Image (cartoon, rainbow, N blue to C red; front, side):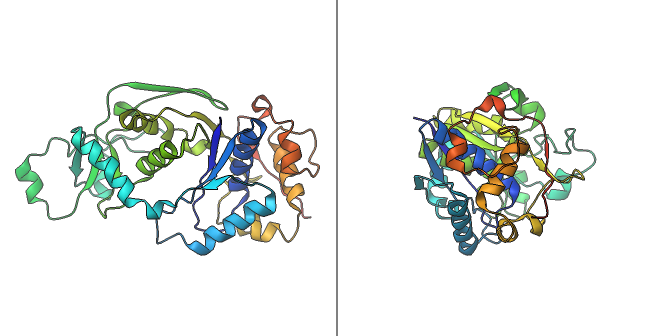
Length: 302
């Protein structure tokens, strides 16, 4: 059975970019008779809140995007992540990293075309004496192999990444003890039995990182689908800073069917921007109809 998930960060109201990713994930699962899982990704407890989590659930209900079960939020799962961290330690794949943010982002460090730095392995071979001389808590990195990871994304097609050359050894736990996105998501998806991951195209490069951790932990690889980004007419990426595009504001002007119809038309799923409910749209959903490039969204006044 197909098991999909929607994993929002409860740090504000849903905006149209969140709605679009949730809608496509839901349509795919429901069109295949599968199971939908909800998970709150609240690792950053300073930015997230239970109040926003409640609003997210209300927004999903208002849109007609139901789910079959909700797994525990990430903020409650530190002990679970500890166990997987210990497994990596037992494999001999972890080492402490004392690099500061300024060092990591220095002009001398290698960077990818998108500005992401490639970790050069500065702390990998530090001697015990050198580590003891450090007077700050370390982050922890996992050694990555010099190997090409590839996937056939349902929307973006074939994607490849060499973790050693294009990423470098990955942080799995920050210096403050908080586990990072890549480890937490891999564990959460694996334990929940997720078989299909639908999310924004900005997270495409995370897939090979998570595939590596899945292999280490013995989880099967899910099917990935990275949907195009929603952009404002001027090319800006939609975000939670666009208060006029969050559901709190949009609910004052539009019905859920109108919002779903607008998104479905922009994505190529229907011929015209007419109101349509999620359940009705799921009956005709096909991945082949979904656009793969960025979607420019023009919101009517009413």
